[in-house]
Amino acid sequence: MTPLASVLFPVAPVLIPVCRSGRHFQVRRIYCVGRNYAAHAREMGGDPAREPPFFFQKPTDAIQVALPGVTLEHPYPSMTANYHHEVELVAAIGKGGRDIDAFGALDCVCAYAVGLDMTRRDLQRAMAEQQKPWEVGKSFDHAAIVGQLHLASDIGHLARGAITLAVNGQVRQSSDLANMTWSVAEQVANLSRYYELLPGDIIYSGTPENVGPVMPGDVMDAAIAGLDEIRIRIA
Ligand code: MN
Image (cartoon, protein in one colour):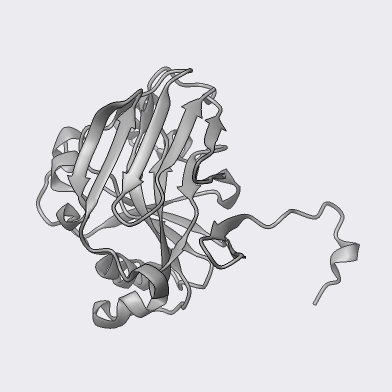
């Protein structure tokens, strides 16, 4: 092992607090599932048929942790005039593998949190229309908001329950985890055919319908039944 003292510019680990454990989860990779609720697939102009899930990544240091009871200040990003919220269930991988069977895939998931896959929708759409990678629409600083993690050993695995997002007190997104096209177990199984999953990976599970824009000064409240609610103010 290379001694850390020899590293020219050491990079701090990206950490998410784990509820009631006094410990942290170190993030290795951030995977995101696209169009995993039929109603959202329709609003994005897609086919709600049960096509295989598709994935993209965000940079690990895009994580911004929202602690319970604290309003997170989230900077409005550059280069967009149509900045969207996407509330999502986040699943954390505690045991990795390749070609994981969906039947046992939940054994790999150690914790859950509320997350927001923040999106520069204008850039995403413009790039998609030009058949270019939509990277700049999805992968940028602070684009991965996440609440503290709750261990599956404490709360069980999440397959149903309300998922909501309100802006300035008005509910914008409201659905149920049971409406996910691909369950967390199926996401893990499918993703592990493309990538070897390792502890530290997290998966944003896709957003329900009624994504929409936020402006500086707006306050977002994101909630999933059984998890800590998070509050974010767009700065
Ligand atoms: Mn998303």
